[in-house]
Length: 333
Image (cartoon, rainbow, N blue to C red; front, top):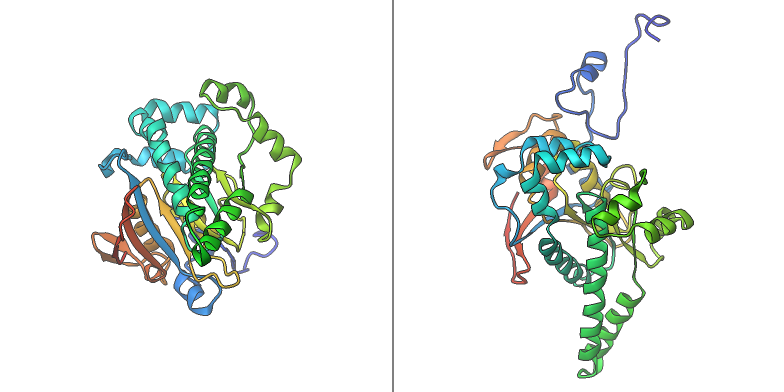
């Protein structure tokens, strides 16, 4: 094209913000001509606001420095192959094993069940885990606590009468008919490798092959309401009825922004999307909003110790330590 049209101007249209630090795009196309940011999108009614809630389990490492940039960079590669995953475990063994510890996953799974069933609305949800093994374990644990809550509510319903009883019966019926599934990419020898980690992917893989899960999840009337992923469906997969994203995987920059945007689509009477954070990505979210949410393409002001752009207007923060059910202290991001 350059040879055929040597004097032509180059114009690019993108639905994903340009990656900071990669100067080639700017060398070819120059600076932004026009930007349509999060705030403008919300103001126009094209998307709904996103709310952030921090529910870090007690077992979570509190020191932010523990999550090194190298670990973030490895996780930025979307879904890790076998070699990458082993490299991650080797180089960041303390942080990696902390996130995947069984007792920590138990607490997160229990909290997801409580949160998802008590949200006050019934939009679909997505649980994002650090890898396939963690996603499989999380699925099993959520199913366990889901059934436990059904049993607990069933015992309570006989003690109630009138509207309270009907409301609880409706919740039990909803929980009994709710469908869940795992959606992860396939890899060689995955069954044997995951079996070594104590999980069985075979029945889940069979379901992924036999059923059109993406169509079912996009259908707001389908009972498939909660999906467990580690990389798939996080970008370019629009499900307007999806209202809640549970993050249990360190993320940053454009990958983080694309993931949280799964919950900001307009749908019926949906008033906002909700990001529930179990790994402490709040600072990364602040930085990403400064880069990708500002009206200047990343020239945000410094606020609260982190670079902030105009896009922060569309995101609000709640901080809460799971499993505390008390009223959270709200703070502006």
